Length: 166
Image (cartoon, rainbow, N blue to C red):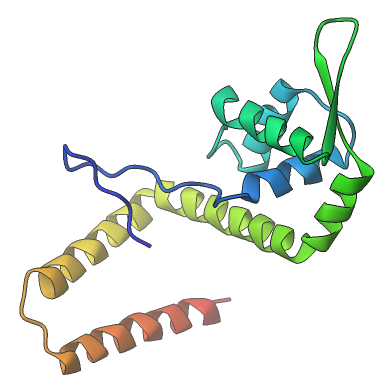
């Protein structure tokens, strides 16, 4: 998946959640007890090891949607805060989408590992070198179908070797 490029040539960050995925994550968090908006933001930040912190502008419209769908209930507390809880319908919907939730949680774990790896100076250098070589060879040169096939085989071979490491 390519990153979108901004007008100044920089790269925007890839979205952490696809369409509708944040809803599942919020419902999953709510199964561990009623919560408040700020606590949900902090739980998601913790889940992503600080790599993603949803803004109130993302959380509250999602909560509104979940409430409209009767998947959560929001009640006022005496303190003025709003208490958020998953409903029976919300639990049923979450159960029906448990496989998708597991895929999302697995992807979050993998991305967090990737973030940590890319912080390592040697890994960062190696990845930048790899991207530069690919860019020069594939995007800026005349690559025949046979050469492209070789490049793909080399990448697949390297990936296989990495998976075999102990």
